Image 1: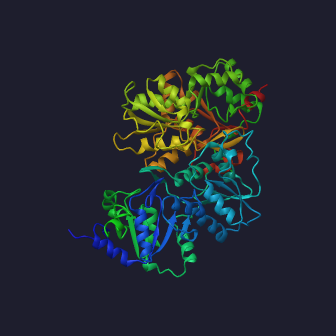
Image 2: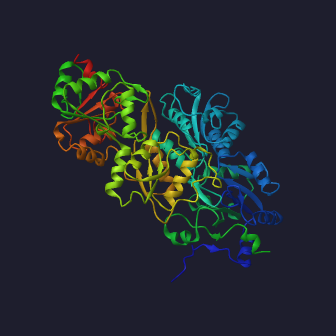
Image 3: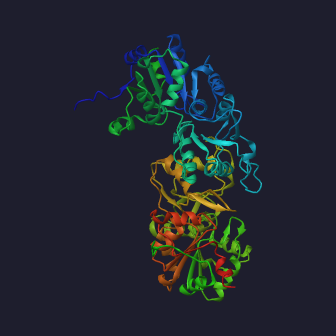
Length: 313
Length: 313
């Protein structure tokens, strides 16, 4: 039996970990399932990040989680004791969506409004870009759906776009109004997804993700699938390279817990390396069994990100 | 220009209405979008039903709405002044689902439990069939999702099946637990849909329907699409003919507001006639434009069911 060149290398001892660390000068990290799982910090993550900083590595955080803005993310890092991470280092799918709307649509800030199905992070990033939003975290949407009493009917003719992301406070009121905007004929609204992960890891469990909620809206409204601003879309990587023009792709490594978003993102972006960690969605069995399932394989994998620190100390 | 034999005949005057009424001795009615739209009774419906009763027609009501049991439906008829409709005349998708589970699965009443994503109608019909249910309208599911405090974890090992229907009180707590049951490995749960309508008409609007919620569960869990117990599945028609063995298919007419469920149901069931009414999902333009879109066409169509009465009185 010959081992394919493509078989991922497991980071399983000090030598491999050291080689891996020497190979790259920039690490792009997914967050959920890599650094933390929901509200649980994963083991030796703080130590690993501190080690990378002391090695003068550039650290960038690329997350599909749309529920928080970059500003809110800096607070999440702080609350976990991961210090001195700035907004500039954080690329969330909400921010990528706002950048996409600015660069690729004809929507005008201060004029056109955006209906949000999703959480605060989307609203904050769109507001930062100068857009007025409706829906989202508006408390009035928590009232039971009633077409006679909802304050969101009739529809606002200034709404020209629906942005949809994960909403863990999903309810029928939000779905019904989002559906009305998506199915109105004049003007036909644009429809944009923050990301398309069908699940997301939280506290060691998997839960329904953004992509499945977007599917509900897409299927019911009969719309085409919306463009996706999160990983693996290269729109997200473009945004990173615009902010960090000095980066060399060959010296960058994408670290994530999902083959179909994180690893694909790194491979399609021609980054020098990819590292899959097994603290999120994928398992070692699935990784090694699925060698030929069409999804690209990572160059490296590890049981957890913290192994980089534990094997070298 | 030759008119195709398949062009639907519009019930547009007294003569056509009378011919139509004479042709059939049994009418199977969809309810939402035909008799009522949400909580609004549609015009001249009571008069039409009374007229059909006085003509000694057999009246059967076949609805994909899973939120109510047959018993609850009799009350809805009464509340609209549609008199003397009995449980035996009503076939809801919740009832069809309970019949399907009894006839086509190895689930044992009194032993195996069923997790319900959906409303009271599903629970009532399953209880009538002797099954214990979990989830559904349990008020504890209205609490915000928290994996540490939910009373629905750990999963109940006696749950062998997930039944999913429309839930207008959809929330993340319900989705998360349904997802856990759908993705557990041992035992692998059965997964059954009450119906697959992606939208439903209510008070003159369209709203997201059962089928799109089921899609969310199917996509996030990675399960195959579940069997569908509602129209156009012929399981529903089998249930009707078992209860009414004397019916002749050629003398039956299916009346509905949807081509892809109601009309298809009648055509695939070889019923003598089909009547599309335009008070729900379809419009006249779409009907006549879509002559060759692959969905079968109805034999008749009418602006509204009440035209049968209005044209003949």
